[in-house]
Image (cartoon, one colour):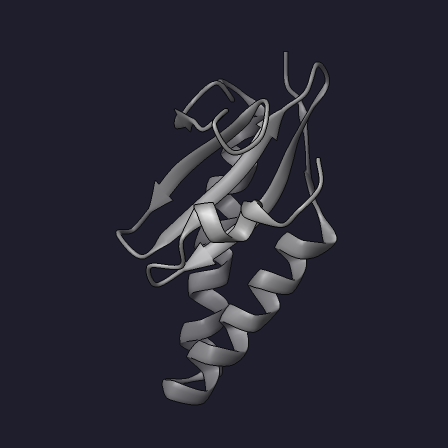
Length: 103
C-alpha cells in the first residue's frame, strides 16, 4: 500500500531556507538539484515507510533518516500517510528542533 507523503509547513520552510542557503553560496541550479534529491527521498517513503531510527524519546512515532551525510529528515508514519515534519541541515540537532514543539 502506498501512503501519501505530506510536508508540514515547518518542513516546507526548512526546504526553502536550505534552497536560499545553497543558492547564495553556490548557484540556484545546484540548490534546485539538491532540494529535488531531498524531495525524491521523502517521496520514497510512500512505500516501506518504516525506515530510519525511532526517536520516541522526543515525540511519539517520530522517525529520523539521514540524507547524503548532511541532512536529517524527521517524519511520522500515519496509517494512510507519511508526514515530513522537518528537514534539518548541517548538523542541526533534532533534539533542539523538537524540544519546544507541541505534538
